[in-house]
Structures are given as C-alpha cells and as structure tokens.
Amino acid sequence: MSDPTTDPTGNPTGNHSGNPSGNPSGDGRQVHNYHGPVFNDPVSGAQLAWNNRSVTQNQQNNTAVAPGFEALAALVSDLLRQLPEAGLTDRDREDAEAAAQEVLAEITGPQPPEERRLRRAVNGLKGALAPVATGVAAGTAIGAQEWAQSVIGSLAGLV
Image (cartoon, rainbow, N blue to C red; front, top):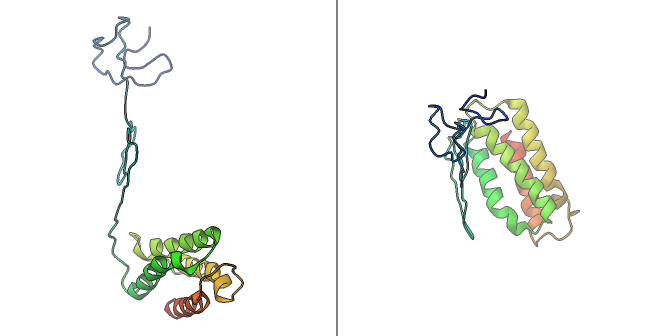
C-alpha cells in the first residue's frame, strides 16, 4: 500500500492529512495542479513573472561597499554606465561587463574583500579593456581608446 502523501514515484503530493478530497479516483491521494512556480526550498530575492505577454523587471540590491573601496566602486559603476557607448563588439562589451560585475561583487559582498580575488577581478577588467586602450578592438567609438586608457590607469592606482 502506498503512502497517501506521495505519488507512485515517491514525490510529495502536498496532502499531509491523508484526506482524499479533491481526488476523483478515490485512491486516497491528493492531486495538485499548479499554474505558477513551485518552490521546494527557501527562495530569497527572486523576481518572477508568468502568464504575461511582456514584462519589465528591475531589481536594485543596495549593498554597502567595503570601507576603503568606495573610489573603486564609483569608478567601476561609472565604467558600466559608459561601456555601452564605447562602441565595443557585443562579445567584448559582455566580457568587460562580467569583469566589472566581479569587481563589484567582491567589494560589496558580505565578507571583507579578499585581496587576491579582487586583484584577479580588476586584472580581468583591465584585460577586457586592453584591446580598446591599445586600439586593437575594431568598431570602437571615437575617444574610446583614451577613455579605456584612463580607466585602466585609474584601476591600477586603486588596487
């Protein structure tokens, strides 16, 4: 005989009382049809949308910058705002954005920034900007080379 709180595969049915109501077959199992997300573990900070034709979602995580890294956070945030106008290819822009997000994650995380990880993230960001700074990146906007050189110089002075 099967447990009335599980289906034949052993998955929970959500009926923990053994009450067979809502099950027309009368076999003692409760059947649930979900028309939205179902979470089986704790969820925090999630944004969900369903049954929409279109949706725009924004999420702002206001985390504190580790003391002493405020200038780096401001520089990287400014870089992220200016990056779309640098005229980079999608791939180069995505690489630079990912590297910048790594830097921000390290200096705004719950733990103090780990120097080695931060240095690696900053070096990754400088590496992503290097093709622009040296003029190797094709399709960059006018003035992007000087901008990238300036950012790389500033990053070097902050870490």
